Structure formats: structure tokens, C-alpha cells
Amino acid sequence: MGASATVSEAAPANRTRMADAPAASAQRTRMGAATVTPQPEVPAEQPAVPATASQNATEPGKRWLRRAIFCAILVAAAVGVVLVARWLRTLPEVQQFLTTYPGHVALPESAPVGLPAWIGWQHFFNMFFMVLIVRTGLQVRLEKKSPGYWKPKERSFFSPRGATPKKVSLTQWVHQSLDVLWVVNGIVFVVLLLVTGHWQKIVPTSWEFFPNALSSGLQYASLNWPLENGWIHYNALQVFAYFITVFIAAPFAVISGIRFSTWWPDQHAGLTKIYPVEIARAIHFPVMLYFVGFTIVHIFLVFFTGALRNLNHMFTSRDVVDWWGLAVFGGSLVVIAAAWWLTQPIFIRPIAARTGTLSK
Image (cartoon, rainbow, N blue to C red; front, side):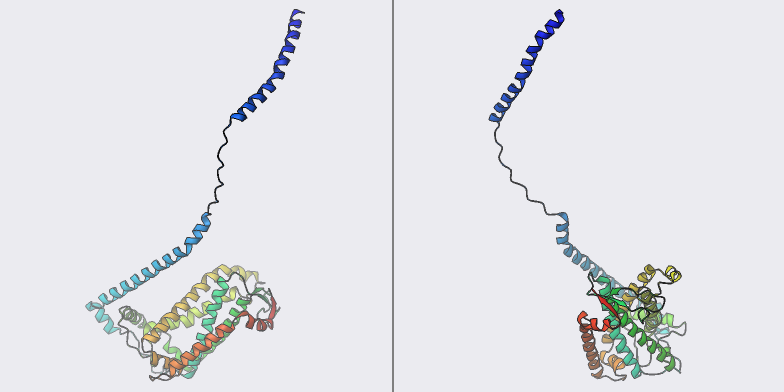
């Protein structure tokens, strides 16, 4: 009883203190708020420039720097090659080698002399198609948005039996169409080479071509170029270059290009498995680079080893020195430039529409 009474008496007092606690807390809060010193307003920080934007701003400069370094390395390497080659030519053993192997091999008596007119025409058409093929090939490789798409008709020339009609960019259609014309021109060229005997001028037919090719290369590298007369024969290094271009690089370009064209018979799973597109792509682009490199070196040598005579050989089928060959060459460049301009979508769409279906 006593304990109960004590607890009962203490309870009101406790409740009184608990009731007073919130009031005291509120009072302290008001007092604290009254004494808080206002802090100065801090201006909002401007958002930092993203790292990617600054990197993009400096990327062009880095690219140009890398290109400059690469060009400097190439120039230094070229100078080094020339110096080494000229030093080698001072050695008695090398001089004897150059005397024994002057850089060219005598052709068989049955080999024809001169360059007929059909070689000049073939040369022009090959140059014409090659420029446009390289251009459209790079466009296919680099373009981010196609000007349109084209799909061949089923069981047509561009999509024969066994091939599913594939939707490709309009640029690829132009590329494939030019490829057809280039291949036809090449077949005609090879047939005429074999029929007329001119193949003997670009096919190495003996082991003597190998040391003579080395001799020609050393003479070119030392800038004391080999004496030659393309009207009669080419030096051994030229023979190898022409042979590789006509009989190796060109077939590789055709075989690899067919793989990712609309002609590929993708309905034959076995062929697709044996010849995956990755292999074709790994071949096709390096072959294109080879053709570009060959063309650059070829043009350089044409103009720096007797331009007027060489151009007459190539374009007028004459072994003379006058300006007609250069004039025909200039006209050829005008024709190529016009064709370059005419490969715009506005001109090729109507032609492409006749061979397939266009879409955007």
C-alpha cells in the first residue's frame, strides 16, 4: 500500500516535468534561432567543362602532330635508304654485280616491239575505272549516312540464282557497277596480251629477272635510275610490278570484292562458312592500298623518266617526243573529272532505279 501510494504521488510530478520539457525545448530553439548569424550566400559554381569536350578540342591538333611525325619519319627513312644505296654502289663487289646484272633481261625474239593502240585504250579505261572505283570504295567505307539504298531485283544480273537480294547503299551499287566494267576491261586486256604475245613483256620468264630486279631497285634507291626503253622492254623491277598488278592483285580484288557484294550466293551455307566475310575484308582494303601505291609510283616515274616520250607510248602508241601524248593525257583527266562529278546521287538514281528498287 505505501509503495503504491508513493508511486501514485510521484506520477503527477513526473507528468508535469515531461509536459514542461517540450516548452523548454521550444524556448531554447527560439533563443538559438535568434542568435544564429546569417551566412553569406555562396554563388553557385559554374558547371565544369566536360573532359570529353576539352579532349575533342585538342584532338585535331594531336592528329596533325601525329601526321607530321609520321611524315618526318618517312622522309628520314627515305634519306637513309638513298644514303645507304649510294654507299653500296661505291663497293667494288656491288659495282661488279650491277655490271653483270644491269637491271633488264633480254626478251625472246618472238616478243613484239612497241605498244599497239589497243594498249593505249586499255590504259585509259583502266585509269578511268580505277579512279572512280577507289573513290566510291572509300565512300562506302567512310560514309556515315548513305544518300539512299538500292535492292536488286530477284534473279537479276546483280542478284543471280542462289543469292538473296541484299539491300545496299546507293554508293555500293555505283561501286559494283564500276567493278563490272573494270573486270570486263581487264578480261579483254588479258586476252589481247595472250593473243598478241605482249604478255612476254610483263611476265618474268627466267630466274635472271630476280637479280636484275634487285639491281634495278638499288639503282632507283640511289637516285641513279636504270636506263630503260619501255617501247622495247621494261626493267626487271617493272616486269615484276606489272605481273603482280595484272595477275595477282587484280584477281584478289575481284575474289574478295565478290564476297560482300550482292552477287555472293549466301543461300549456300557451305561456301559462306568456308569463305567468311572477315577474310574478304582483310584482303580487299590492302589490295586497294596496293593499287593506290602502284599508281602513285607509276605516275611519278612516268613524269620523271621522260614524260613526253612515256606519255606518247601510253596514249598515242608512238615512240616520239612531242606534246600529243601529254594533250591526250590532259583530255583523259578532263573526262575522269567529269565522270567524278556525274557520280552524284542526283544523276545515278535514275540509272539505279532501272536495275532495282530505291529507298531512303
